[in-house]
Length: 397
Image (cartoon, rainbow, N blue to C red; front, side, top):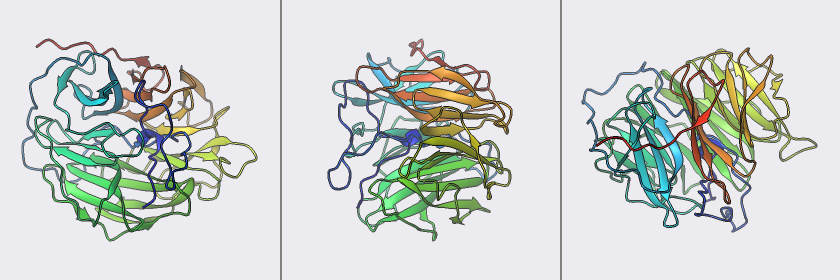
């Protein structure tokens, strides 16, 4: 099976002191620097408003909080409300997986048990992403999959209805239902669905063939009862759309622009795509955003993001507001792409991960460390206009 490099919101994590070389490609060749999602999604880092039936079970409150590990470096973040969230990370040089929980919107944090897995840094086994559907049900993944149904007190490996050793590329939850995109050994991208409160994964009949490139990537985005999957293999290959509870084939935008695309959604019908154009075809590399108002079709002509060269993630808390993770900075528009402004500048040696919004005002993003630059969690509380690093202050016991 081809080696997987996840999108920047689901990028290969390289924490300070943990990794110093890129992941190996399918034949041992180095893969290029992560081209952020997402998760991943990026992939949204929160559970969008529920429009599908939720589970009847009451989620557990979770384990008692412990100390924040010294030297903790964040890798992935997920919030289920403005107050309640978790961060997956590691403490190096051992790079032991750790999970922190906040119940006051990131002001204070407490350590809770993480899955007994390594942090996946260079395409091997382990996990590098975290998503919760509610205070009780969460998943750590990429490429392995671990699940908790008691708020992180216990973690287990669920079985999936896929032969061989599948690679979990991305996962998201909405309305009490979780969906995952998985590369199986037959070089097929499968889409699986389960109620959030139990392990009952079902395989969608919609299967996406892999592209011809050496680094297949997948992103899943959910918003209410709608959902979208895009597969990149250097360039945009194919996709799927969730409609009336069923995944169907879908033609994503930017299939002929010579580069990958990342997605973000603010409503079940308002979808944004940020495309890195010309990355593999030249002559120049640019970034354009395309906006769909029906969640299906996009206009033929997108809007150029000034000076951007690498769309590593995109998020849209409300229609007409778009935030793009571009190399060392976050750039945003608040007037439907008429004007753009840099809202955060960072080190060019870092990459972005998990850009998303919990609600129209609160958003999160993770800067993945490379070299001597530390990883950091950023938050905004004004709809993306300003972003600031989060200090992992110990919660009172």
